[in-house]
Length: 318
Image (cartoon, rainbow, N blue to C red):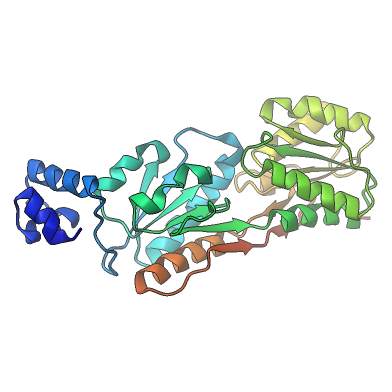
């Protein structure tokens, strides 16, 4: 199916069809909709061009707290990097993807998405999709992934607690089994603890949501932990509060590492040692993939970035 075929079926000129796809303002609404309906029916998509630099940022349709802080930091990095490369950004909730049938865009970035929700993407759209912090579905062309190395990141935190003399480490991973990166993080933490000969069992490693932290921290304290690692979500805020309820001092009695929260971590009392994704590099890789697709260059299917450790005062010195 070519542009001239769409024009013939719609009873308009090829120039009119071209104007529809370039969002020309002087096209009547009924003509625009007729052309778009025919294009959708026949699976037609306009070719990507270097002049078309609209990027769609796809966000979860609902507020998902395990990824909320991550989502905000990724968005901040993307909104700085993409305009610098002359890309224009449009934000779209995942439950409104049908809008993409009616607009031109050169690529899309989905944050915190379930990869299986996008298995039909290559059939529906010619533009590349980049998943942030998720693996691409198998055997799906035109879907790419930029993610952080969960095994390296979890080991980075555990190793730091070990180097600072912690004898028994407890962990609370934000999220539920089978969702997001929770299971992968649990496996990575278990592996890191085993490697350093720490005790490992279900009483010391937990998956949970916000409302369970106080209860679980109470159980971990009864296990005699002196180190606590809590990746994901708003764990830094909640864990600091929970430890204060048990009258435990950070870091004198409990050394603590959480995930970076830009509005809290450095301002906590004491400032919290954290692990963080390299959001600037992540945004750079996303922009590199989009530019490579536009100029026809080869693109890696997946890019994996290392976590960084931000050392502050919530882990005691030996």
